Length: 158
Length: 263
Image (cartoon, rainbow over all chains, first blue to last red; front, side):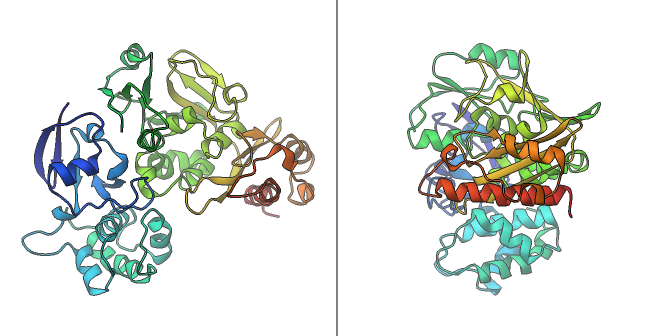
């Protein structure tokens, strides 16, 4: 089937089988391998992308469902060599170790900041991170990073 | 995933015309797609309901809150109307899955699936919600038919649900990974009495008649302090024994009562 999706502000089209998952098209079709596949069972959040601004798991969305919509991946965040404020916060607060979960964490963090505003508190972050698993950090620095990055991310354009 | 045909009709009538055989409706897809990936479901075609205008509407009709089948958990969780008229349902929606699941999953999908540990069935049954389909209205007491089974006909499509706005509360002990209810209790105070619905603990949502009878007399935690469902009627699996679920039901019931009527 023919699909057209705006990926990182760029119109992309493809002819894909209806069973194509968004994450597979991003990675294998478009070469955007920053969206990771951790569990493939909707649990881990490594494949989190923004679909019309909302954090979703790209392993549980068909490209067909995204047809006509807008997707932002980790590759679409930095502008003119400048990290997005949430990326900068993860860097400043060492919000990662191996980095596998990081793209999903950053996009989930941005969606949280957009939904709850710049005053996003730690308790809300902990509650809302339950769909993103990290096996290295123990989450402390991830929570700190999102907390630090929320202020600027809440109003930053994507 | 096995190959399938993809349809995205723009009306309910067109969607119904596409049904038959092994075709399946897809709403948010957050139960269906995982089931298809694991091979549990192999539909020959998917009929996407997301492009049908108006199916996600949330509105007040008289004294009832009417929510469209395609309303996503996030919309229910954040809707000013739901928070004002039926705050229990907004809080319940906030406990479904995780934030990414709530961005996609829908009320209609959850009700059609009728997972024995899903949340909305408890609200629907406790409130006496009406399920609206493309052809009729189904009373909550007639709708749920046990595990993953409902009164829906093969080609029947849920278009929404009409909730009475009653004092109600939902208490849930979540499985820490799946976030489904190990036991969830929804209590609603009706003019005619109290309805108590249990999800997660049995093979399907059910009414706890002993608790309803006790609470119709005196609506306090103390009234039901010694009450516990018979473990013989509950589920036992790797997550929890029937005895443990019975105990959770008792604790969740107390929490729900306390939320409606702190004493």
